[in-house]
Length: 284
View 1 (cartoon, helix red, strand yellow):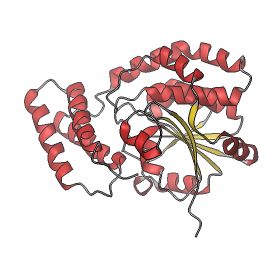
View 2 (cartoon, rainbow, N blue to C red; view 1 turned 135 degrees about the vertical axis):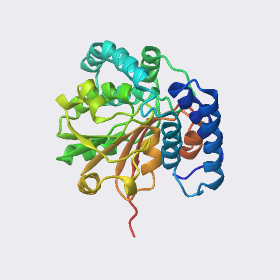
View 3 (spheres, rainbow, N blue to C red; view 1 turned 90 degrees about the horizontal axis):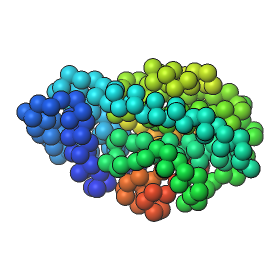
């Protein structure tokens, strides 16, 4: 997915928001905005939002010296989501379609997005999404592929929702490799974060090699690319991964909530919609 003009003010907002998490020095904040503006003037229209986001957060890191400005808030979200984990497991256990309920819970975790300027209430949003219909619902294709697969690549998104991913991974009942970011960026999940979430108990953790808020294949590690290309079943969580992988030549199942007008317009759904979308490779 390429950048839309509506992405540009969002990059500036992200730069300022991340900058304020990293420093209170007004001169440094002004420098962050200046350099972000210079970057935007020269960015290729073919770049993805995830690629551009990587540059924005590198600017923040280079100017402030803080390589993980969201560290404290990530810990807070992890604590909050862990506290409701037993209730989520109970909801799945008591549901008529456990896999579908686990998918909805995994998508519900996608509300925790600090790259989007939206407020959220974890418990209330989970309750709402469990009652919500899908705008795109490729569930039958998902189940069909799951039945015949022997291995699953699950690409994680943010720290808080990784707890919700654990619910779904357990319900998949197949071996799973869980891919994370190479370095801290926004509130995205790293190896350290995934271990704190307990994901190492249900999946093998894999470093994607990506330093962007979303997997970008040409910037991933050789090990991850090999895994991606040979995986029989790929699950991609969140908007950032959708932005980076929506044009890939591979079957991928995208799980996300459309939290911004750019994504909702691109998918031709209402903002706030929940999505289970099968992406198919090009066949020449």
